[in-house]
Length: 303
Image 1 (cartoon, one colour):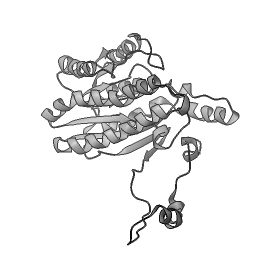
Image 2 (cartoon, helix red, strand yellow):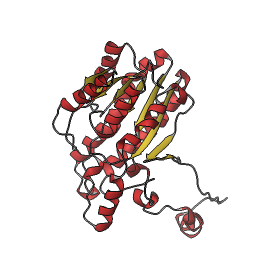
Image 3 (cartoon, rainbow, N blue to C red):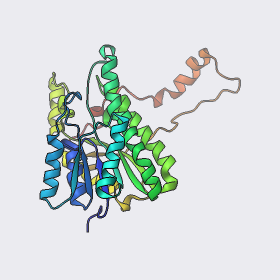
């Protein structure tokens, strides 16, 4: 018996990398899978039905059931069709994994409007479109599982990824909102931050010895290590786990903190800008965060 026996899962961006491994793992644990992948390049250009079809073939060869879908997550009607495909072909939908992604990295003051919109459309709008399309079905069935993929670039920070980081932090807020709004229907929503070598990570510039060392460290983290957490979150065993942020880094699992007050100061007569400068900021400064990047926070070798 698999943890996902009798379940139907839709995995976006499942033709390669992390998404592919998630789709294969879900099928191995008993789920019927809609393998969505537009087959684009890293920047979202072009299309290719081959990657999704190949994953479907692999699942079938292993004795599982899957169907390919090449709709774009960044289009509302296409997202509806993804969900309709699952229901038409398999009769239901139980798990949505919002994994599809592109990157268009650029230092902030040089980032174009098109580069901003393209990334936000896929990562944030796409996550909303697909999740919203599944919501009436989940509500009617009194159950469902959403998994939203986030990134250390959003949770901690990174250079040249304002579009990607903003969209991925937005996905965390979206997951929390969905968890709150859908809890009454037995629906869960969680976010997962993967650390693994993939096509998206492979686009990171490595011009200095420090950056090259960082990339080599990331290369040791396999995409397949991410899948078990996603399978678990899609299962009945995770029915009471919702609104959380997890990270997976090789054999390490993390529960990530959420925004809560760190320090407070009070002044009975109210605050002036001068009083803030003289009293409030010095009192709170010890709680300030440095301009860290993910490598500064996760500084040890993956285990």
